[in-house]
Length: 547
Image (cartoon, rainbow, N blue to C red; front, side, top):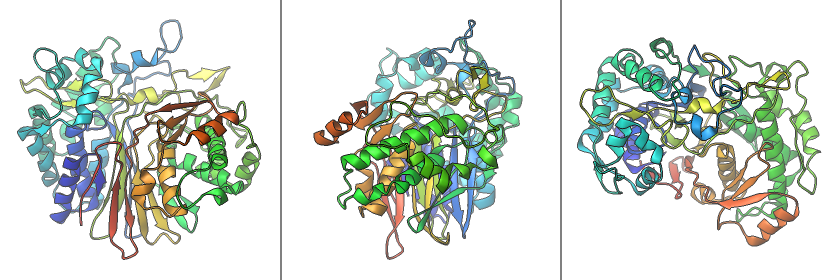
């Protein structure tokens, strides 16, 4: 397995060695990540899990939901104007009903082997005995003054003088351990009902901009098993999440647009992207993003174009769209005409780069890719503590800020607007690569990173499958992050792209900015002898473990 932290990978492997399934290991991994990497994910957030078992695929949707009392003007001020993003994030309004724990419990009932209680012990032990704060966590605590606004978070992440704990400090979280013991004993109802649920609601409703969450919202939350989407690609299948994830749909469009232009013919074995291919990739990504922002939203609230999400992948449609890609960057791009009955306004909602990913394969053939998140760094900066005198707890998400703050434009509704019980659109892209007949899983891959996630995953897939690099080498290739038509900007990983390529892209009209792009790709690939090999992104603190 490969995860974002060595302690989480170690916990997962111990579960596998005890005879557990990949899903069993996923429970243990997520619980440990919520402790040692709390800035990225946890039981206060949500996630997606794509699972292959005995030739069958299931896509588990544990995305957060808006409370029943949420209205489409949730992020508008008294004058009807959208709130500043940085003001909306650290507030109760931003918090969606957490889904990751219910998703893992539902998946465990169908696909687990070990007792539920056993899967909690690694995280409980670490929370009680303490763990050393990693350099990445220490740096993010020090750079986030918003954490000091919440009393429980301030007591946990800072010393009595208000100084952030340094790297290496042994941090204990007895409140988290106590919550996990209760959930281990009584199941997910110990989280979604009773004292924990009441504490969540209290945290959400006690901020300067309180949310509308009620205990009933938590009690009624359900994870949804969905049909995975699969895309044929180079004698393989790429399989992943349907909406509310936009990840695989974007990836499929980009690949289809590049194929229509025969752009892959310019790739070399060294994995580096030549300027012409990079230009065409960016234009394809802009076209895909325009469709994403226009059409994709929670499928239980939003109809798919022409009744099916794979309409976005139709070869004739992509050939027509590919004709818009010329030698220069187009000044503007617009969504394609897919369904005359759908009259949406374009969404300009903002996502931020946080999240975590892990990939796991067990000895009996169960393979999964799971991406989970609390959205922004440290989520809504609200730490749930039941007030029983124990320090610590768990952080709540700010996933509702993934909705469009503006519900309509020019009299047309935005597909990704807020609605009661609705799940916000996501860029998370947990991906399984299968053989052409679907009989064997070839690879598992995913990344954190916000809107660039699909492009991080595509970079690794293209480098590995088309340039023949090892998965580790493909993960280490320079990152690129096209931000779509509403931003009209591409981010390049600073110090990694040749100056000649940067200059060539600018000459073709691409607005560029070179910045750190710390993807956190984690993946597994099946070697020729059938054994699994793991790969972890050196940009974060990921680790591979197993046999």
